[in-house]
Structure formats: structure tokens, C-alpha cells
Image (cartoon, rainbow, N blue to C red; front, side, top):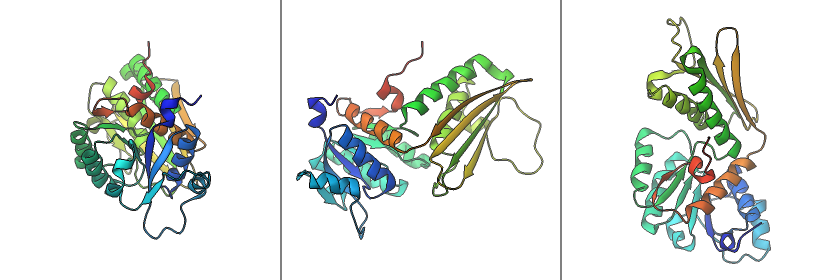
Length: 275
């Protein structure tokens, strides 16, 4: 059921002509939000079917612009699934306009990650490697497994995505790896082994292996495997549609407008706390 408060939320969607942009438009419409701002690359031949349908429904408050700074005051929250290159400027604009920002961009540099932390001192930011409810549940399952299996089980994470995905390993794979590293009370940089080639050193049961596969149109598959003596435990998540990412991001946008400035992730949004 759509609440009256949701209908009053004005959302800005960046990169509406992209695949995730279109999904975000659809998810926002389904949630009853008022899309008032949309941005896209210059020279884009069309604004997309979902947004076109939205316009044809008489939603005349929508402003389409190439520059977020020109329209930032016309929305209450911004959702950004564009690129790392564009994110730094979007952070500046949202800070100046005092608007919450939902970030769905992965593969960020440490300097840009630090930039997000600084911006979160003055505005509300939700940043997650994956906005799927199922993924965030499975991250908690991985954390519990790591706690119970301890150092007797080695951990390997295998992820597969479509051939257009730029970053590797995926932000989601890093979420699983971070959960295991946290249980083992070490930083991921001390434990991670990325791919393997040539002669291998003596195995270390504390190490966390991360392997990436790219090909075809795979939306997203992640397997976290714990290998013991004579047995293995696998926790797997398969995404068959990007819509679950968009729905989660819109849920985060609705949640963010009533939160104090700070840096949050989907665990706070869905308020899932294992007993």
C-alpha cells in the first residue's frame, strides 16, 4: 500500500536512459513517488519508455536536465547509479543543496570512498554494494556461517556478471568478503586473494579467495563457499532481474528523507538484526 507521505516525496533519478535508470523510474512509479528530476547524457536520442509513459500520464512537474546543479532544489532525494567519474560532482551538488543521496555505484577508489564519508557528515547518504534485500540477507548468513565455522573452514567467493560490468570483483562479492574478514578480526586487504596464476604459496585457512567471471548477460550470481575437511557449505544468491536492485534503492530513498545526516547501508534501511 502506498502511503500519503510516499506520494509527497520528490525523487531525482540520475542517468534515466541507462538500464538501471529505467528500472529506477519503474520502481519509483510503482512505489508512488513523484519523479520531479531526471538527468541523462547529452545527445541521448530518447528519454526511455518508462519515463515517456510517466510524462504521458500528465506528470508535468518533471524537469529533465543534463546538469543536476540546475534542478537539485526540485527534489527531496537523489538516486545515483551512474559512474564513479560523475559521483564526485554529484556529491558536491547534493551537499550544497542539502539533499539525501542514494549511491549504487561500485568499484570506487579509496579517495572517493573517503569523499563519501566526509560528505555524510553534512547530508544523509546510503551507499551499498547491492540494494537487493536477498543479497543483504545472504551477507548476514555468510557472517553467521563464518562465526560458527571459524578457522576450520577456508572461504572462497565466486561471482559472475554480464560482460559490460566494469569493476571486478563486484561490490557484492566485497560485501561477503568484508563480512568474513570482520569475523576473523582482520582487514580484507590482509586476507584477500584475487584470482590465481602460477605456483601457489602454502595455503592459509584464513585467506579469502575472490574469483570473477564475466560473460553474456548474467545479471549477477554470487557463491560463498566454506571448505572444510570432507564437507563444504555454500551460500548462493542469483539475481535474475535488475528490478530487485531498483526496488531496494527506492526503499532506501524513502527511508533516507527522515534520517539525520550520516553514512548508512542497506542493513540500516531494512533493519535486519539476526537474533
